[in-house]
Structure formats: C-alpha cells, structure tokens
Image (cartoon, rainbow, N blue to C red):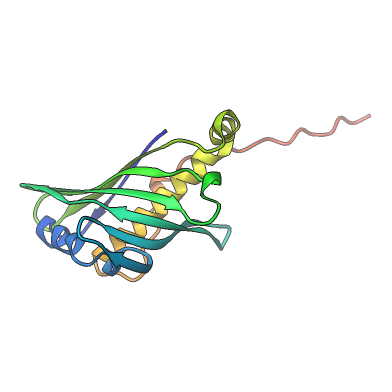
Length: 175
C-alpha cells in the first residue's frame, strides 16, 4: 500500500533542509537515539489523536543518507514497530523537502507498507487499518513539520483529512 502526505512550512527551503539534516532528535518525536556511521536509528512515538486521546505506538526509525539537489532534499526512512512487530506494518519510504518559493517549503512523506498477517491483514487494512495508517503518517508529518518550523505543537489542518463516512440510522417501523 502506498501513502503520501504533505504540509507547507512558512520557512524557506534552505532553512528547512538545514534543520532536517541537523540532529534528528531536534525535529522527530524521538524518545532515544543512537548514531551509526551509515544511518541514524531512532526510537520514536507515532500515532494519532482520536476523540481527545492519543493512540500511539513506539517505533524504530532508520534514516538513510540524504540526497540533495537544487531546491530538493530527500531523506530515505524506514520504521518498524517495537514489541510485537509482526502485528504492525513496516513502513519504507522517504521524507522530502522542496522549495515552494521565497520563504516557503513543502515537507512530503511517501511510504509503502504491506499489511501484516497475510490475507487477513489485507482485509482488515481495506476495512479500517488503511485509515489508521493514513492518520499516523499525517500526524507524524504534521508534528515533524511543526518542529522543523520551530513550533511546539502543530495546528490541525482539517481540510486534508479523509472524509468521514456517516451512516444513517433506520427509523423503526411504526405499527
């Protein structure tokens, strides 16, 4: 399954790219980190807010070597759930920042994942879990973007949320 989400930052490309390349714990929701010569391995919390409560999971995030070109920076990333990791999808993709003009940049996350648990997992993913994955990616990018832009808490952007599905209740038949 493929997911892509973006947010716009009121901060120029160079400033955003430079902050993205700084120590990841300055912009990721990091719990702990350990650096290696080739990549960063980070322990982070991902999730989303649901009816005023935080639903989250601890994951290990690995950041690959950045690829930079004029007006664009791409940072490969993977994340795996900690604990019972076979019950959660592994995400593999990239974080990208691009120039949007003077004083603006766009932060994009593109990931692929395979639902866990084979055919049963694919069915659950189609029914509901794909929306959970979407909400998790959105929350992750909004929080990372807010920290990159120097904000403490991201402002919710409800304009890009998936539409809610409303079910009509059937009126009881009167005798």
